[in-house]
Length: 68
Image (cartoon, rainbow, N blue to C red; front, top):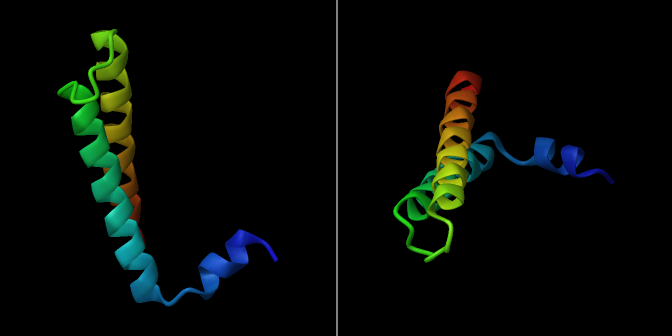
């Protein structure tokens, strides 16, 4: 059985809660990378990864909002 079929069988409320949770996780981890909480030696890479995660979290939030 594919994971796509399992996800589509999930109730709409469950998908909404999971989507909101994932948006929060992506943005939070992105902010942790931006503020260098993980003490990565190269600050530029940490900043870039943080920006990418934040942008992806916002994109996911937009898709979630558009799909409601």
